[in-house]
Image (cartoon, rainbow, N blue to C red):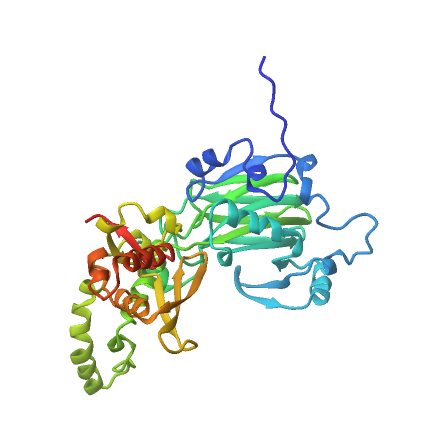
Length: 409
């Protein structure tokens, strides 16, 4: 007879949330794809067991949560606004049986950090909330632009979840009955909008210890059966279009014509004709500007050490990385220059600084002016006036800083 696995206590780590799956299984089967539901029972709450009022409390436990409280405002069955307030005022609403959201409470910050760390997400796009709801509170059917883990801590809440075939992978949120549908969503969801709860809706009764993962865009509605407290850890999506948009902007503004003031934005026909004359030729050159685009240009260069790139350096071919930048600072005088090498990724920006001979600085500027499609190598750097030894040192330094990367010849 096989031995039944014991449920581990829930903690501030994703591994305990997705049990009995491991992270690889969860990533393959659910992450960004399908809901995950697991009823664990109140004995498995672990690190979250003390979140909420206790029998010995004087009723003001909410005052110790920290974070930013909000009270949702509904009209005609849909959320229309949120009122931000102090913890003291939110406590009054809570005791008056009003739903209260507490954004980024101290008791969930470790959980948010764990989500970002586990799935290598931008920390700025991860947040957490406590939802404090009284009996009979409800949230109408809607979808969000976040991937969300929910841990039910107190009370009972019914979730109704359905796949969204009308606007899959949305970049905004809206309700089933909200009209008109936001234009930004209609941009990629032009079909007839549903007016009824989808037939494939699944009902989940969440009790203390229930863990739920709701992927971005899935329809969901909630109804509170008894006074409820639930922890929510959200990831606000960064899509490929966001990253490519940022990269294209970074590439274009290197040239002064793209930094000029825009005009012709109103109804004046003369201004529009001026815009056509100036902007038209520029638009035709965008493909040339971003030709040679690589993965490193979009998500940032791979970190490496100078020692990792020495072998075969004289025969290597390089290209500039769009996320890299070079600045010649003004603190140095004479025959040396102060050079700052900067590289960005969606997660972090890093920079290194050097005092270098002016020939090195000039070579750095030459590299920074290359288009993404231009290839260069050891011989090109030597032709700038550097010795072979100096050319090797410069290429190794700039590559390690993430300003250039090796490419196939």
